[in-house]
Amino acid sequence: MKNVQIFIFLLLTGSVSLTSFDLWATNPLFTDVRTADPAALVVGDTVYLYTGHDEAKDNNSFFVMHDWLVFSSKDMKNWQAHGAKLKAKDFSWAKGDAWASQVIEKDGKFYWYVTVRHATINGFAIGVAVGDTPLGPFKDARGTALITNDMTTDTDIDWDDIDPSVFIDDDGQAYLFWGNTKPRYAKLKANMIELDGPIQSLDLPNFTEAIWVHKKGDLYYLSYASGFPEKIVYATSKKITGPWVYQDILNEVAGNSPTNHQAIIEFKGKDYFIYHTGAAQPDGGEFRRSVAIDRLYYNKDGTLKRVIMTSEGLDKDQN
Image 1 (tube, rainbow, N blue to C red):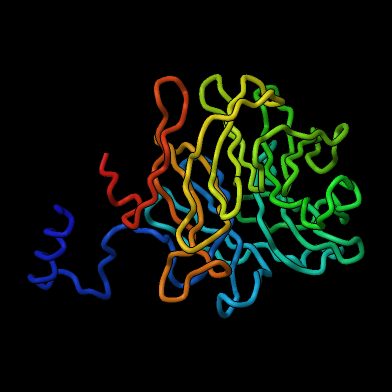
Image 2: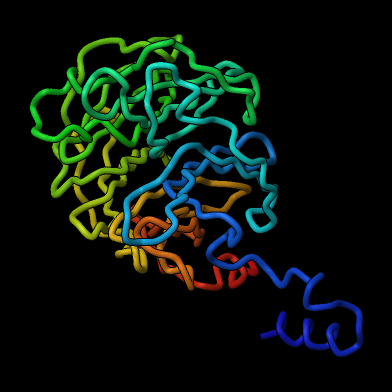
C-alpha cells in the first residue's frame, strides 16, 4: 500500500508520468515477449535467466520455438534483455524445436545444454553449446548430439530425451539429468561434453518431466513436473545419486498452462522459485507462456514450503 501511495503522490505532483514510471517488478516478468522453461545461473552479483521463446500466434496450434533468450539482473526485479543468444539451427545436426535448456559454469566456461529435434535420428535429442561468458557467444561444443532417442529405447515415445539439467557436486563431478515419463541421469566427463559411464534410471513417483537439482546445506533437492496438468513436486536425498525420498507438492498447476517448469536459485541470501505460467492475458496460454518469479522458503527441518504464485511477484517482498 505504501508503494501505491508514493506513486499516487508522485503522479499528482507531476514528478513522474504513467509512461516513464516503473512501479515495481510484477508477474509475469516480461510482457513484450513470450518466455517459457526458465533456467537461471548466478554469476557473481548477477543472475542470468535463460528461457525458451514461445512464438505461436495463438493457442490452438502447438509449440513454436526456434531460439533461447537471455536476461540478466542484479536485484531480481530490474531485468535487462539480451535477446536470442542461441538458436536450434546453430546445431547443424538439429532440425528445430528449441525446447527446455540449462546453462552451467565449469572452469570459466559456460555450457548450455538444450533440447532440440534431431534431423536424422527420430525424436528429440540433447545437445550442448559452450561459451566464454554467460552471454556467449555460444557454439556447438560437440558437432553431434550428446543424447539421442536411440540411446533410450525403453519408452514408446520419441520425446523422452528432453529437459536437460546439470548439477556439479561438491567434489567437482558433474551429472546430467533429463527425461519425459522416464527420469534418467548420467555422469559427465570433466570436459562436460561426454558421458562418463552408463545411463541410470531414477525412481520418482508420477514423473512427467522438468528435473531441476539443487543443494541447500547437507540436503540435495530434486524437483520435477508431475502428472498432467503438471504440478511441481520434489524429493530429497543425502547423496546426489539417491535414493530420493518423495516429499510433497511444491507448486500447483500454473494458471492456464498444463505444463510447468521450474528453476530454483539462491541469490544474495534469498531463495527464489522461477517458473512459467500461461495466465498472461489477453493472449497467454498453453503455447504462449510467460516466466514469473516468487520467493521460496525452507522449513527448519529442510523441507520446502509450498510456493505461493502471485501476480505481485517480488514486489510484495520488502525484506
